[in-house]
Amino acid sequence: MPELPEVEVLARHLRPLLAGQRIRRVDVCRAKVVRPQCGAAFAAVLRGARFERVARRGKYLVFSLRGRRGARLRLLGHLGMTGRMHLQAATEPLPRHAAVVLRLDHGRFVYEDTRYFGRLTLDGAALARLGPEPLGPGFTARYFEQALRRSGQAIKPRLLDQALVAGVGNIYASEALCRARISPRRRARQLTAAECGRLRRAVRAVLWEAIAFGSTVPLRFSSRGVADGLFYYGRAAGTPDSYTERLRVYARAGQPCGRCGTRIRRLVQAARSTYYCPQCQR
DNA sequence: CACCATGTTCCTTG
DNA sequence: CCAAGGAACATGGT
Image 1 (cartoon, rainbow, N blue to C red):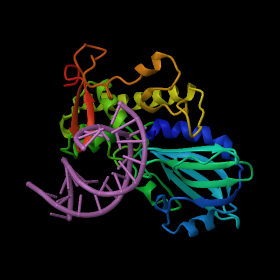
Image 2 (image 1 turned 30 degrees about the vertical axis):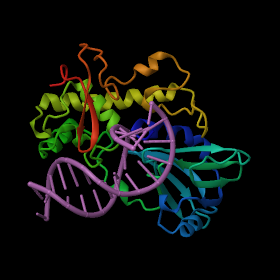
Image 3 (image 1 turned 120 degrees about the horizontal axis):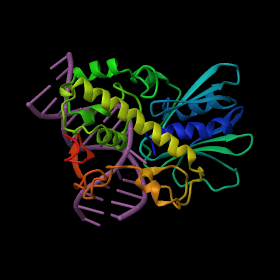
Image 4 (image 1 turned 90 degrees about the horizontal axis):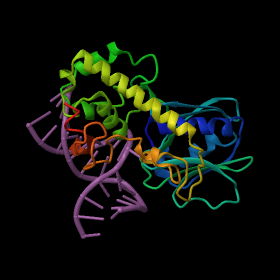
């Protein structure tokens, strides 16, 4: 669930639910997802803290809290590939892969992650390494063009570099290149100014539309069942077919391109799948 | 059994 | 030293 749009929708969902809530107790079920590595120290700092703000930066959730002695705390959450966060009643069963549980005054905040690739950390250093927000003012045409000019890497894996632009992942990288009609194999520095401009606009449009889509789906962040509200692969269980059409190329190898009918292809770049239309994207 | 999976970090290769 | 690519991480779905 974890590219920028999914994290943004989650942040909006959690914001009103967490504001003002106090952490009574912290249970670290999987020590490896927590930093500092000592789960006891992590728990001790957060115990008694109160949530003040929930924000997003790239693929990170940023929780601002006030510690029990008044200190400002910043908790970063990264969902890895399979992480989820939701609130549940204290009487509900914990999900199988619960990694960290924050017990609140009423109910609890659960971070679960089947593969445990995600992280919760009190160390904010990761944010300093991120590039500009793609939907923010720092992601200018000039910045993007100059940043791409410095790399001979293929443009698709280049888009996954969080220091170039923060929040684009494997799904939306393919989608943005499709929308901009640029081949994923093109070298970054060989894109023309016009192509850089198209790609920048495509990145923004694809992310913006995904957020808009996610925000209109009634979200139910339950840990079990199919309709858990996160628009994974563009499919929300039990919703009309139009939602399944949301992604133009991702995971559609062999299916006809919606524009020209050519079969969509899958290729592997830097050990990740890329999907594209060989006719439309040159 | 084989292969694939929304991400990041670390190691190797050139 | 640098850039780029691949494996590792851990679990589940098809």
